[in-house]
Length: 349
Ligand SMILES: [Zn+2]
Image (cartoon, rainbow, N blue to C red; front, side, top):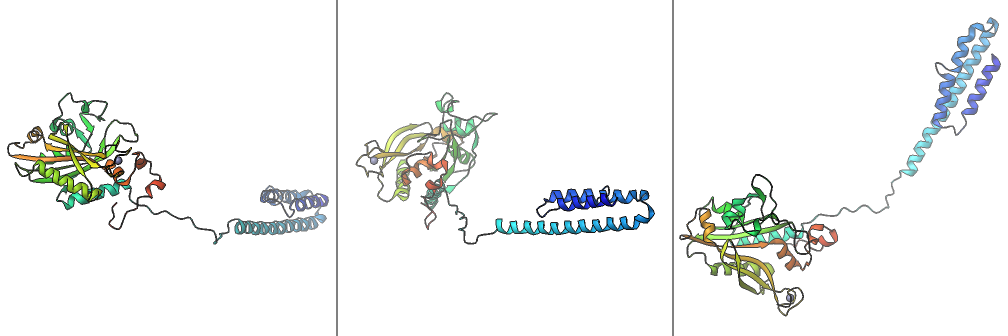
């Protein structure tokens, strides 16, 4: 029995070497000291030991138990110290390292351009009115004098939702929404997003931002002359006081007469360059006197009222003003691009 106990002690202490892993320590603890362990087994078998040897065997069992426990305690303390040491060296904070700089957000150039345009129009007396992105055929087409077979209604151009609804293809639905509810005199700008089934290219996008601007009053109070005056004033406020403006006869279903508006090329100053195709002019927006059929569709007598309207693309205004030649840059949100357009003290371009 004595030899068996000495063998248990020798093996346990050999296994509890300085670099024993915590798993190994636990394994030895359970095997030697556990409830089903080797020392417990010896105590249970004491009945077979001759009575005169029992005190000595008992003392020896106790001695080994204390010795193994003490050894385990030493190793556990060393392991805890090592873990702490490791944490202190590996997880040390180096206060001399440079910090992670958080970048400050700023307004998108299209937001800045839109704000600037609205500031100018509000200063001229126009009121901002929000109108729906999701429209029905009446407000987007029929009331704006688009005949039933007009190509703009085609599946190729319009996103149809369901139940006769569609994503508006222009902000001119704003004219109908406002005029069917309110009596002139009115001077309103309806800003918002528009949607067409176009690819995203240098010049086009399936989603773009427009503003529909219109003024309606009793007949004779809002004429083509007012339209020209407002547009020249507006375009010079946005592009600069020396901006040249010209009007070209054109056609839109919802205006009569209609005019395309050009500004003198900002790049070459009128001398002719690649951007203006050597003409010295760039097309900027469409305008005209509101068609009598549009006024009729919303219950206003065209014998009593008249008005003008113009529609502009915010992206196009921003591209010309900022000298951006690829529409896609506005939607890629590359910081290297966006950071070139800081807001000024006035908060605008
Ligand atoms: Zn040019």
